[in-house]
Length: 551
Image (tube, rainbow, N blue to C red):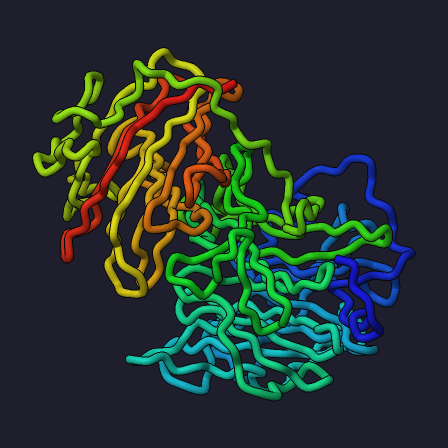
């Protein structure tokens, strides 16, 4: 961000004075260690004293602890080495239920006052779970913090009953100095509303900026004349299979519409979003819920949480996810935010022996079935496969899987051209079709175009056995189209099998996303799937299945 204007200087999480310390030549993620073993949903401000302060979701901070800190605070003089500095609150606000979570704080400085927004997961204002956004003020980042005594965004009734998820607040100061609060989550979508100049009261009607059932964790910055909406997608907390990732869209106004790099709206059913950071095959999965800070040299940094895939839980398996705070350099290639993006895989030559163009009246040689589906037929130069009322996740394992080996073994890209009419906007959970890397029914990764409530998304799901049970999670990718080209790129890294997701809306321009890993040993087989429901039934048309050797 290169943010100009006096008002922007007052909103401390997005711009800092030029006296900020330079970052060290090297640092180690997670930067919240050893102060905190988990520090989810981080937000950072630079205080008037020149010190950085990070605020996190209410969790226990250390392994072995079970009592949550009520919005813990860390402090640092350089952004990279942090110590525990206390908690924002000693008790919950009077309007919060005794057991309510205080989640996803957003810390800002407005004038001489520090303003803290936060999620309250359950209030005393209504029966049942009714989340809201609270706000507190303090003269310093360490307090004392005084809650306003009421929500700044009250619980919002949902059509049909219950309450929309009013989560994840984030403040923006626009080019004219007006303040906007962003909030929302999967159940209801993301909205923004204007605030009064002190940031404590909503001053107008709210505008939806991202579709429901896709995004949460909004954070908006100004950069080169654009407003960039960062938002996180997929499950935040699925242990070793957490695919949480950050995406972006941009707009000329704070209220949108926010479009991705391909011009697709974040409000569309075939939902847009350009990846900013995703799991890339290293130790970290669940790379999401970000904030942005700018150091004194003008370098932007993405602050976020992630999960060590080898140590995914704070205490017992399937308990609190261990989500420490990380920081990475944020760059803007071509006007789009990006963090530690790997170069795109490049196909070198077509492996004709492992390829099937589906030109005959039957499958080519080399295919084998797990639970053959007689409805799948080769005709008209394509494999036509109606979606089965079946699935692979969990223990049911009743869906058909069409498989082959990419022989000879090595690094390769597998590609298919998929056409499937899942409609738009309607609910057709969870019809899907696409590619799969498959070891067995409980150990696979599938890249599929899938109907998720009112949205149509590309999901890169992963199931694996963990601690005596099955763990399933998924990352999502960029927008699909009526016809979508899919790729899985296989590489071997330190003996592990890495599969990276790729997609295209025209078969020419390719995008690359996140990576799932498989342990050393025989390579998973690769193939196709079409399942998730048959009411109404959709037919997946696979024009070909091609294998390319990597250059």
